[in-house]
Amino acid sequence: MNTSMKWMALIIFGCLCLAYVWIRIDLVLAGYELEKLTKRKAALEREYEGLQMQFSQLTAPQRIAKRAQEQLGLVIPREGQIVVVAVEPPSSDEPAAPFDRIQLAKRPENP
Image (tube, rainbow, N blue to C red):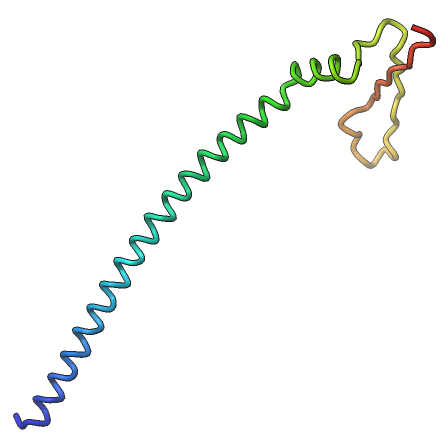
C-alpha cells in the first residue's frame, strides 16, 4: 500500500469519526429536546384538566341558577307565566329540530 492510499484511508476514517461524533451530539440534543417537550406536555395536560374542572364548576346548573336569582333578579316563573310556542319543521323531508317547543315567560303585569 502506498502513502497516498494510507492518507486517503486516514482521511476517510477521520470523516467517519467526525460523522459519528456529530450524530451522537445530535442524538443527545434531540434527547434533551424530547425531555423538555415531554415536561411541557405534562404541564399543559395538568393545565387542561384544571381548566376543564373550572369550566364544569362555572357551567354547573345550580351555580347559574343561583347567579341568575342573586345578580339578575330572575325567579322561577309562576303558574300562567309560561307560554308554549309550537315550532313546525320547514318541510316533512327535513328532520325535526332538536327542540320542538319553545318556552317563554311573560313579564308580570304589576308585581
